[in-house]
Image (cartoon, rainbow, N blue to C red; front, side):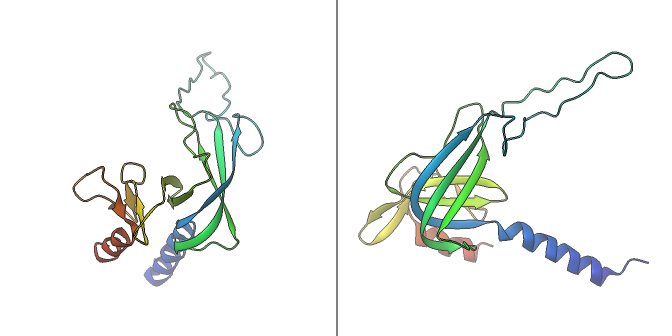
Length: 165
């Protein structure tokens, strides 16, 4: 017989481990590293396969290119946990090339379920604004409810993400 209490506790612990990686922060890029596939820390996008017994072979087609890493010196953490003053973000490079910024300006970075997105941090009248076309969602909530391309106030988006969850 299945113990549903044990199952619920296991499910909650697994989901807390996954969400523990989610973070929203503001900081400065310290380093961007590009790595070719097949090197340490950047496995090939397709597994190596052997020919089948009938002589046919499996073919893998992927637009996943190399890997990219970005180290960000943290100014402030809005969501999640950052155990040190620098956070490393990693992702595959897709068909359009690397997308981590090489800039000295502050950026807002979000990582949700392993997907990393970022926006320049625009400071205006003491508020931080973000580009909703670069950082499309926060905690699953669209940053621009009317799909506008105008910068939005980060604190307002955070407020909506709490009420809409």
